[in-house]
Image (cartoon, rainbow, N blue to C red; front, side):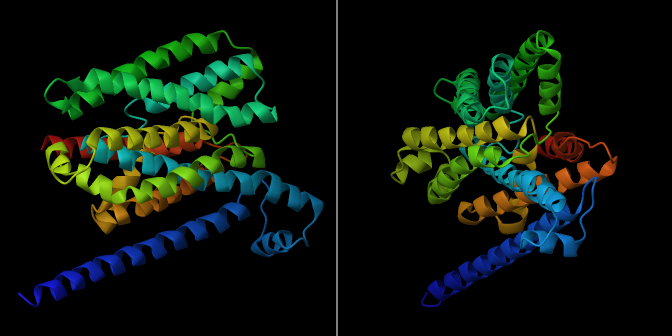
Length: 346
């Protein structure tokens, strides 16, 4: 019996070392992708030119390309991936549904509908509207999430995972139809912008988009990490969580609000990029296990790596044109979703 605490602490230490190793590897891969993204584009900048420009020794043209176009876009890619992946991680834990994802459940579609409505009436190139986009997306995402959870709730049983996925797909289809009707009535310049945005193209190529998204992640990601132990308990089921003293209804509402806010703010800036919230937590779970103290930061890193690599691939695939990031992620995510669906059925 006396050796049991030692064995437990040794096992815990092993898990922690494994998680830290995974974090270091993922962070290193993100840094490599970050550097490659700074060098890559229609106008190539060599590593030496990038370094000179970063330290103020580049030409005016190189400074314009790097600081005004590439760096904001790369930073937004990293932020988007982290926000969407952590949002999916929360939803999977709260619903105990391996297929839960803000895109599949229709939450992204609800946020997108509000953004399209806003774009239809206000020019997007104004600074103030850019900072309003995450708030409007939050309203749309929150209303959609409330509707989906209401439709998937069963009396005396709680939220049904299967009904939630089916309700999300149905609601997303209805919202997509509404957006098609709305898009038809847009002006040509507005239509072009919305079409690119709906394809999941990262529209934020200026620092004001970075500043519109950054505060949401700075506040919400530490909050979710603080609630990691609560997510561990709630993942065991409501009865067990209540028995351990967790206020399930309150915690579920707070965490659901955080997941919706993360998804909504990311959609407002990055467009309809799906599957990140599905793939990120699944890959992270295979790397570090189910404990949310490790799973949440791992999901954020995997999501960031996925989006920044997808954006890099999209920019170099058919130069001088580019493939929207959302399409590249969908090419990766759709087969993975079918694989998870088949595995869950088995």
